[in-house]
Length: 242
Image (cartoon, rainbow, N blue to C red; front, side):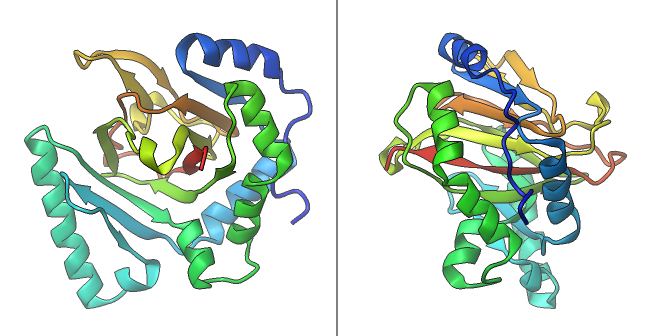
């Protein structure tokens, strides 16, 4: 797994830092070497036991492991949670539904000791990566958490602002590993909103692109329609000051 996470040495860190300073968000395209991005995409596509993350309103989000989704009881619980999310979203309240693999939880609970996802989480906490994002953001970031995510048809992440400042959340990140021909009609866009709900900026889920944005700020991931392919894969999480 030597090529699992190698930063592109040609990154223009100064230009990205200027963009982040001006808007609080930036997309770093071709952030990894081509070999590294291809290997990481393969890990997500073929080596991930996807579960589901579902949230509805202010209630604690629910996480269904891949193993749990393959049981009748898990399927029943997932269907009920999904209905709750849809009902909240229909009222204009917070809701979400997408496939995920919680890498930090998996590491703590020993789901796959020494596996690719654990190695990836270690790479996200190396000085090389943290120093790069510190240089771009100008913030003293100490560590990163992370999960693998997959937005398939019918999945979405409703409007929210990631206001967990008490937990040390400073910058959210999305390392996109969707197919490189991802079409705008397939949804899955990271959209930033103003106070009136207008979209002020949007990032297409480009293959091998890292989105960084300061939190809190209102944002969402747009609905992936039924005709979209599977899927909009990414590694996501927060860069923390504690």
